[in-house]
Length: 124
Image (cartoon, rainbow, N blue to C red):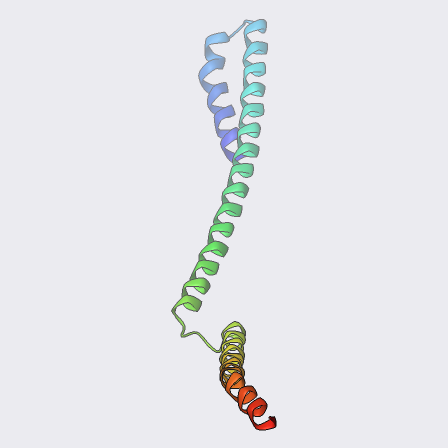
């Protein structure tokens, strides 16, 4: 508002001497001063909106920077025990055990024909 008053006073001092005695000229100068005041008010409002928007943008960038810093810190940390890794280890152990059992059954089946043949020969 101080800027508006300074501009208004300046306009009255510089324009009014040129219009002495002309009623229409003075009225147009007053109208011009009102236009200037209106325009300055609009500019101040626009600047306030821009400052608010820039403040929000800076806050958002600050939050994103903090999140990126946290992600970088987490990425730099040594990984802890993973439940997925434990599940994979358990699954691997189960597959190995199943494979050993299949090998055992396979060994029994491999000897089965000879044992059946011996049992038949012994029964005769």
